[in-house]
Image 1 (spheres, helix red, strand yellow):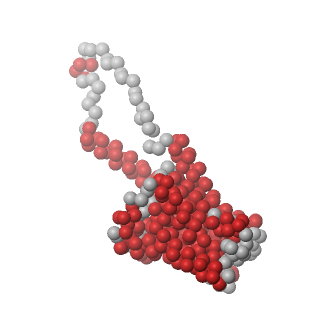
Image 2 (tube, one colour):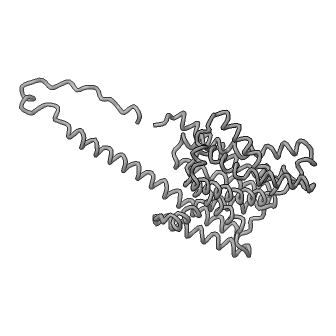
Image 3 (cartoon, one colour):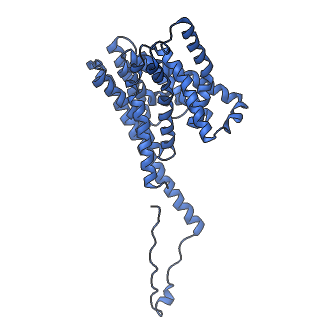
Length: 340
């Protein structure tokens, strides 16, 4: 069992990771006049530079030769790189174009999309509460589409691209730092080629807006890698159920920034749609916590039954025939489970 201090440290790491992801909409407007594609290309290039230094410092290169010998994993890494490129690009554009609230919706509905993909692609079976959450989430999208006169394309693109990215990463089964390194390595040459092309056509802002602007563009590598490192530190210290709850911090912060900081409009139909999404997530979270509690209780019961079969029933402390002629035995002091 992990110590209380270790779990508290993991909780702080998790809050830090999701908090940074939630506050990142305040960073992208600082990179203007660079467009979304230029910012995205810099993010790819500088992310690889940062994670390469991290791997060099930690001496974590052993996974690379094994990955290069597995074409299937390389294909999945390429798929993950492609989908995260779409996700990053749409997200950066949506923030700088004034669609922060719609972007936050994408990450709110992402768990529902992930569940739906599990049913369609992995043939997973859903519990009734999960079916209810998916149905309510679908209803929310319909309400938002009718209210806005169009489907929430930004939200849907972000949700489906990130769900596909998560599915590919699950199949690859690499650590966070290693996975990001492989993905950015796939993206590095196209991103660098795009930046070179911008420079030759005179469209790049990196060289024309001063050293401060270039430093901000370079810091996109830190903005990408630092939350991921914090997330990795949290994942090994706290239960998955806790991480599942913490994941809602990012879209909550994004939503609040969109409404309170960027002053985006929230008509009645948008409030109705978001309320349905929050209801679906409440049901989903309640069901996940209830299932985790039942699983733990069942594990304890099976462990106790296995011990009974191994040790057998405890013999009586004193045989009745002897108890009539001998003094009672002095009971031994009870010992509690030190890990309970």
